[in-house]
Length: 267
Image (cartoon, rainbow, N blue to C red; front, side, top):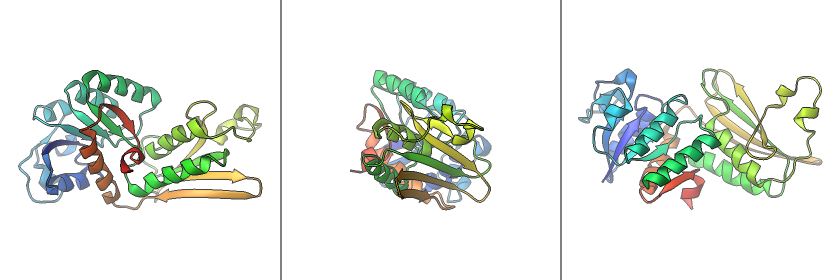
């Protein structure tokens, strides 16, 4: 049995993960973390029958219970400290929280290798979002001009989303030279061209934050007289992220160091 800690058990994805972990035959909910529901039974807080697990107020408290894997679906301002703390405690980690950049992941990878534990991080754990990335990587081999539009609700803390950021960083590593005018040469207000994300010249990412959006991401490719759009739209339920997250929980047990992207695990 794999003993799991759900950090962010009171959140949108966390509330869906708690019953999924509890129902899995090869997993057991060892601990749960959510400051706003601390002291409650994790099952009750998630809207199911009591599980006999009391929600902790901090990660340190949650780690007092023996466990194997920490799943983090918390906030961009705390996820890095959570991941480093869990690694130092000898736990493997599955990171579903966005907000981490390349430098953060390098630090996480080095610490994970030092402690010989695995970390799986993905900007999006849904299968269809993973296919967006897979198809976009294929397209980038043939069409070097690509930009990304990232949509989310008005209250989202970070920009771009983890989905868009991971996609941009991956595309930047393989796509050819863009034919677009360099942003520094643009007249008017160059900032409206978005932000370059990834190595080299990067890929331009435009983050839209408006009510009614959940999460959507578009990869826009252009050639003379033709265009290709690859888009993923998330619905209002967190269920699409559950299966991918649990897949990562099972696979991280055999990993040392950092693996980024669910696409690396699904083949």
